[in-house]
Length: 130
Image 1 (cartoon, one colour):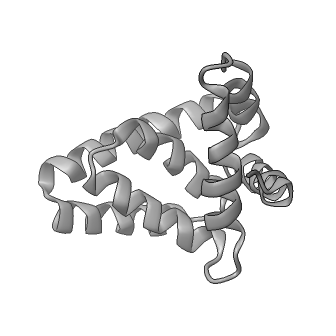
Image 2 (cartoon, one colour):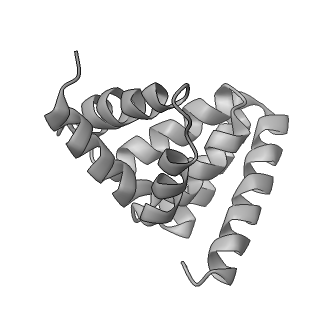
């Protein structure tokens, strides 16, 4: 059973963190087979996990960066690195987080995290998002 309130609030925070362009593209590109995943993402992932008041968005972004790097999910790491910037994490905070990732997840993970971060930062600068 779907909780429409969670789904709506989840989509709102998803848009705040990832941006309308990303969310619109993700939701538009779905066929009937993949659409239920978008519903799960909005309701469960973004609605339940990102809308409670236990952590702020910056804290959630830092957690996600560490977990995504540790699990070698670098495509998602890039998406959430952009979100971390949108959530107000400073360059100094992000740099410290990536060093922490390198120490605790291993140098190869840290090297890849910095590589992805560089690409995201360059793209955001080119698009006037930074």
